[in-house]
Image (tube, rainbow, N blue to C red):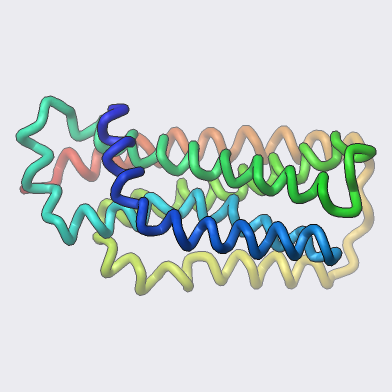
Length: 204
């Protein structure tokens, strides 16, 4: 499976230049302004890059070649998830560094870690929802529903943020964090199983 991940990373090398430019720009923003939160984009971009990798696979008709290789369809699916996990984790590390560089600094390292971990879990939630649809519909059709799929949660969060809900106690925040983490990990495992089932039933 490591070979599949390496193949995807080499496929995405064209995106690396754009990613490097964005890294420089956001580092500059974080250093000279108080807009360091913008660097959270790296976490989500990392989690969504498997979509780009799958799109490249479809254009190259990789699905016709891959069955001839000594890898299972389950390994093909898991390699995309591992790719998303690794790139999103790298994005979370960059985001954490930007938080440290920003006005929070090392004095709030625990809070910085919590924020970065929360962004990583949110990216994993997006990955879990995206991958089964991506394997089922293909990259072209998936693009049509991508904005709708993630615009609705954003609107919901924005609406809840304006309802004037009472502040949570530290204990409540802890239980919510534990529940959210467990929920995302469970959904991720279910997503992997569902994607593997979808890809095993596909005809090539």
